Amino acid sequence: MPIATDLGFCIRAVLLVVWTMASPLLAFATEPDTVDALLSETSKHLYSAPEKALAPLEKLSALQPAFTPSQKERYHLSLANSLGFRGQHAQRVALVQSFIGEVTTPGRRASFLYELIDGYTSLGQYEQALQALNESIALLPVLVKTGDKIAVLQAALAATIAFEDYEVALDFAERIYALRGPDKPGTYAACVGLTDKVELHFMRGASAQARALLQDAIDVCKTNNNPFFVLINQSNAAVDQINAGDYAAGLASGLPLFAEHAAINQGSDYVTQLEEAVARAYLQMGNTERAEHYGLQAYQRAQVSKILAMQVKTSKTMAAIHRAKGAPDRALFYYDAHLALRKQLLDDRLQRNLAYQRVRFDTQDRANQQALLEQINKSLGIEKALQQGRYQNLVLLMTLGLVVLAIVGAWLLRTLQLKNRLRKSAQVDGLTQVCSRAHFIACAQQVFRDTDQDTSLMLFDMDFFKTINDTYGHATGDWVLQAVCHTVQQQLPKTALLGRLGGEEFAICLPQFSAQEARALAEQCRAAIANIGAHPSGLNLEIRASFGIATRSVQGPASFEETLAAADKALYVSKNEGRNRVTAYQHSGAHST
View 1 (cartoon, rainbow, N blue to C red):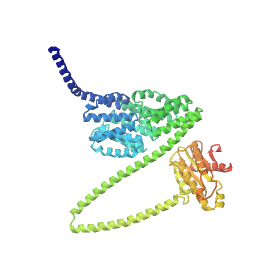
View 2: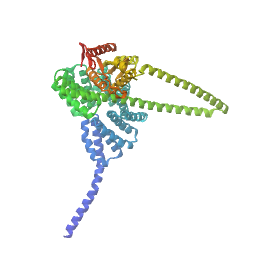
View 3: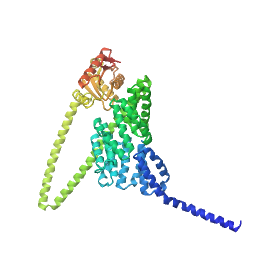
View 4: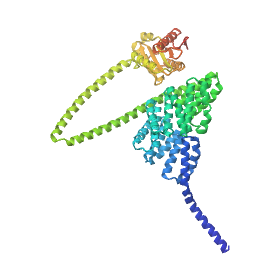
């Protein structure tokens, strides 16, 4: 090979090596600007058109090795926010948990805690959400940026909505709105605060108050150039129109919003709520085909998001649609799913409330401990300033005070224990350990006063119970009553109330139970009683019961007393028509099955 050729080859080789080594450095020099631009584009879209944020996020994913620490935080925060908008809350929580340990800046940590709180709440992990919320609120005094403060207050608002504490949530919404500053009506704080207030008023059934603020909220969010929040307000207003029975107006305002949701954020939970409401509107107007189209979309979205309240609502709507279409098998499928989801929702609410009370108690306990420590420190300071003689007198007085407190405490403890025993003996039937007659009636009356939703009462009476007592003795009769109560309690949801009215007659109060749900539960209890084995008693006897049901509804009885009288009439029909059956009272009379 000629020398010139060899030299040219070597030069080209050296240039190739230099270019290969320099290319990453050149790329690194330009990438921070590219990363910052993509991060800014992502942030801009996340709060106005979340679907558009996916493209820059995908580009950022490939650039992660070149991120600075600050860029890394911003990227993870934007990705968590995007996962939340798309309803992927499990991935969102896992992402934040894997990264939040590296975040030390109070403002940025507050934003990560918001994503964690909202994710935990959406997943039903309420105690973890509240613990993260406590940490978030503790950061408020050191936060400077308005956006960081909004993140903390919005997280607190979302959590209190999940626990249905709307009054506290409204207070957080007012605090967000107050961050707008003087003479700045079009700020992000004003848009978020007004939107929160409108949505909360709709949630608590105060439609007039919500509609009074609705146009202001829409105008403010338009001024802030925030179409997503404008769409939230419009969607809530359309759903409220349908809920109020104005179906044509609700459809006219709601249907065009689907195209806007598709352009801004197709995965939003507001789409599911709007589709379910539109399905109900079409059903009420007799268009079952359109009702099924939107109802099925809402049902499928609810299944994907796993939000229990929407799963319960959409399954009930689908059952009603198929019932109207004359498809009993499909209606029964959705109705069974509705009952199972409803029970799951009631259990979830119980766990949610327990977590709320437990974490609130823990927080208060820590506050009490802090106050106690501060008081002890003050006492120590006073003691150091006292002379020796006064110190001895103080010790004597404190000792005397402790003795008096101990005596008073012991007396209070005994008084409370005695009071609890007396209250329990008055509230619980001694034989069956269910509610006594007086306690059951008082609690059931309160249920009827507290809600105007469907509430059912179920009466049941043991068949031929006197024969059991006369033939086998009262000990066997007592065993039968105890076994029946235990068996029935196993069939009941946690919200039901079982009481003994006297002798072998019992009553069950079922809040928010329709007539159909109460009938199904009564049949379940009747069958369970009939299957009680008498082998533990050493006897072979038949145990049967007759049931009467009545439901407080628009066309039925209104008060507890009227509903109880109606259930008693239904029970009388069961007894007259051969016993061991269920009879439901209807406005036209009682019908047994």
